[in-house]
Image (cartoon, rainbow, N blue to C red):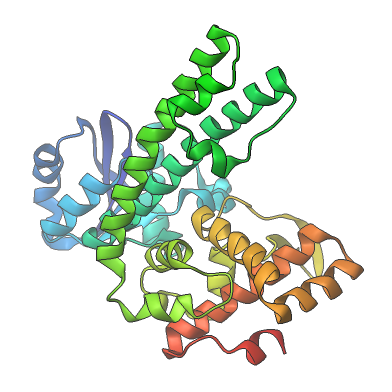
Length: 338
């Protein structure tokens, strides 16, 4: 007998299902999120169990890692892509878990990449840095707005980041406004320290890797973006073609076609939002500092608009990075922009 297992993972509990070759459910249990209990219920089916499918939720790390370390073959279900099989699915946690097992049996399970544990930790550290940078940006904008509202002048973001208490006091603002600005600046100071600490750690992790130097050879890609692209990509060998990587980076439109006709938009949330951000950022820097990128941008912008032109640059850079990582060669300006 051959078995297939699906696990519908929630924040505090999981529904574990095991089914056979005709999708007959032979086990269904709701269990607390404790690895030992889940391993115990799967144990009788282990020898003939094809694989375990785990729903890709925010908290999948502990379960996937634990199952793999226990010797199980594990697939991470790409839940954003499963909607295309809605006709097979019913409502309810048990049927959701059974549905995952059924997709596995049918060979049509959309899967996500399970990044190695050590690589995943470094990638998540880069994501934490980006989260803190966005928090700092919100604080900086708040200070800029307070100054503009109360003085008519708006200090630049770089000036705000370097503010000390004496700078705020010299502005001669209302005491309550001064206190509000000091609160924002105090948060900015702490965020600066934490961002610098994370950046030092990330540099220790990435600077000796050959991919890091390759990515930095591309226009618009400095240390921060090279780190993000490298860690979010993982192993580039998992992308069979450059188009797969561009799609994963959200650099191409998503659409459904049938008989040569467009039947609707695809799922724009598929892919990696961090890579999408990185390549758009790189495109903006490339247009500013690379003459060839600037000329391409201006030609594209004349035919379309600025947003489409930047996305076109981002797409070109994504394709270039794919080839650089696959071939181990630095950026080729002529190959990219002609």
